[in-house]
Length: 181
Image 1 (cartoon, helix red, strand yellow):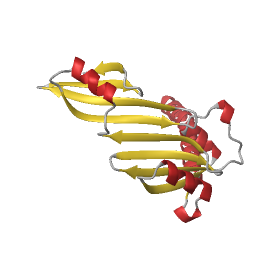
Image 2 (cartoon, one colour):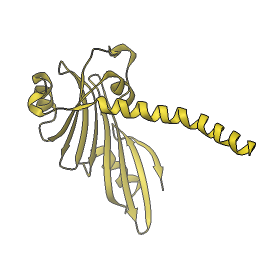
Image 3 (tube, rainbow, N blue to C red):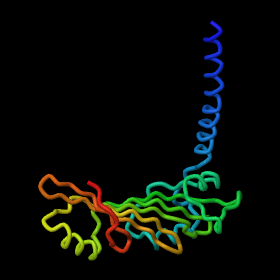
């Protein structure tokens, strides 16, 4: 009987911190608020329309600094203050998904873009012709992380020949990085 009580006490002691952390995560998520396009600061709307002209704006969320820090990588040089307001814009286009983060002044902080079956850079096409002759491109996608100062990108190309499937990875310049079977 004492063993059962001790087990229950230990279980309770380990479960309470987990419940507290889960409650904190839920509270943070609840602080983000949905914003209508007409209530978006005009500076953000102007930059969004200029940078991403061929996409549809699906969702706008005004997010607190704490959520910004957790979901987006923060550079120490661009460290946000607690009074800052951030807006996450979720957009889609033809085989394209974009999530962009703006500050209230309309400055793009970061954007994540994923395009499927995009036009491959010429360097990737040449590499495939030289090293994977006879293989057919089944699917490709590019992941980009866009910031005001630079663009990081990774291409993933799936090729097949008979039953031999391969996943090939290239950097933003189309240089081969690695292969996975």
